[in-house]
Amino acid sequence: AQKVTQAQTEISVVEKEDVTLDCVYETRDTTYYLFWYKQPPSGELVFLIRRNSFDEQNEISGRYSWNFQKSTSSFNFTITASQVVDSAVYFCAPLSGGYQKVTFGTGTKLQVIP
Amino acid sequence: GAGVSQSPRYKVAKRGQDVALRCDPISGHVSLFWYQQALGQGPEFLTYFQNEAQLDKSGLPSDRFFAERPEGSVSTLKIQRTQQEDSAVYLCASSRGTGDNQPQHFGDGTRLSIL
Image (tube, each protein chain N blue to C red):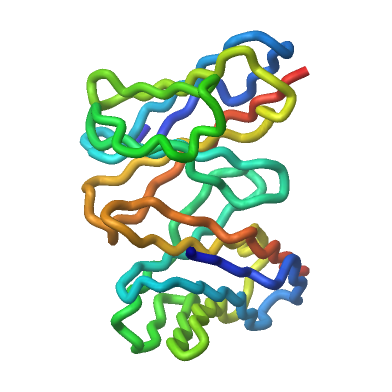
């Protein structure tokens, strides 16, 4: 069975602070992709970043960066220099199997305070 | 527009009524998904289409839920004899191909309220 855990329910930070969102994905699959999506108050889910399980190199894309630790199945997502527009619910969403069936975590609500 | 379009944006129905939710995916996208999102929860998978073929309907909660995509483009999710527990946001997503590394593009959703 697969299990996605986003232990942080809500986080508040002051603008310009860095913030890290945690995600743990437990699976027997050896190959999979993991996505992060953002859901602002308007409701639309927005794709942010994609990561595969066989590449342990950490990545940076603009203000977003990954930290993947295979030993703990942790896919942590960091926003550098947070902005008020970053306020949203962030979902960790692993994908495995023969097609694109995605399992969403429960989400972490991020509030960036001006 | 260029994104996934869902209609209606809001739907209120009385318990027992049938409802139909529409999804217009991004033009040319092969894969189409429906999700159900309860308040405060992450989206949960309902069903998946590859072109007109419904390849996975394992997430549909009961036989009152039915989805179709007859011409491989627009899709309709139908809920018969609605019940209060059907109240949720229904999200549609599409992606370009069938490979497992393709991000899904989501619509704004239809917020369904059953009275």
